[in-house]
Length: 218
Image 1: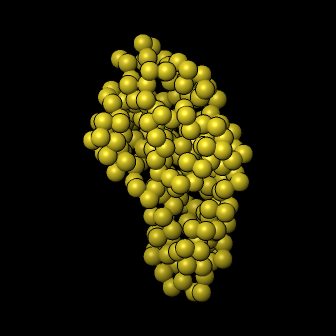
Image 2 (image 1 turned 60 degrees about the vertical axis):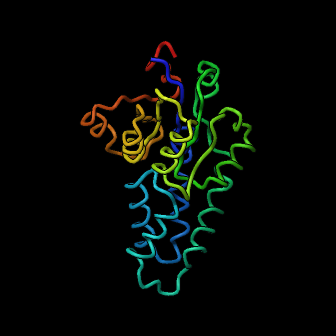
């Protein structure tokens, strides 16, 4: 099989940014106290791939509904963005990414992330990575389901296509869109990934240098 399109999640797949974003959620929520911040972190880790916008809405509505004079929604978003901005510019890039781009020169590449689209595009431009993703860099506030449906409909994602992710949501979104899926394990924060991938018969890779073996004629 020759994949015409490769779709990548960003955090934990292309960039080693899962841990810094987890810590950013803790920092942003800290004015509400340790218990509330820990609850938000737990919700974040359990819902990998979901946007910060949805997670902070959940935080305010379900974890600290009384607010108690803490920062509002916009202030939480600002605190989070400030905490991750530097880290995204300095964190490691996935080993094997540039080589894979060279090996799949005929394939269309996209980023489909739960991260802020504006933030992603700025970071990828600063790090000289934008041209690798010739199909575009997409993120929230649109959900991954919305992005995949739109890009399939407009012909930007051509099948057969492969989605490389590191969360259960990535798998569900790829499956709903009719894309093949492989789970990248090396930076995931999902502790139950092994059981999940076995139970759902999902292929796994340790790093992106292993993608080529999934489709030798790629």
